[in-house]
Image 1 (cartoon, rainbow, N blue to C red):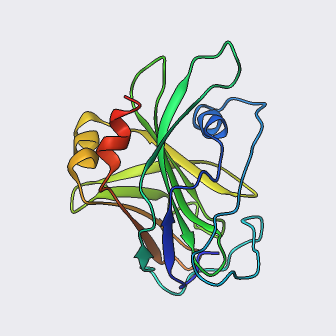
Image 2: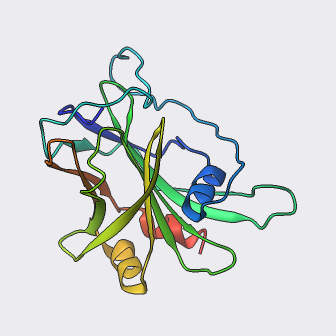
Length: 200
């Protein structure tokens, strides 16, 4: 639900890295494993991302950092090359629903980093999505597909944007709800560089 509730940041893996890589490059036939993020507050009734979300009333939900960027590696099969990524997840504290999940990986073939963002359902597709580091330039994210867990958008990361991510303080992922209001989800970059150094 894209609501006006607080957002908490969690590095919990909500979508398997293999599934993210598959969505980013349009491959078919993969398996998903998903765990519902835990809230540090009193547990709220469970709500999954499969429930269509109504438009948000607040265009800038507050975010509370809980843990940082996590580096993960995996492969689609034994013979497939190892794919590594760093990721961070922001969840709505009341529902535990993913607000935004950001996965940045370095494909083994191109070695050009790619950012993939999982966005909630109930967004305006024509409005697209974008991300920004601190007060730097805004980079558009191309929405590729939507399914019961959310919508997925990605783009390649240029060297100057990667430099900004490594030295920046905050990554902001933005999109529009159905009422054409812009929603911006902030994610701290405090430990991004250290996590990225493990996978580059």
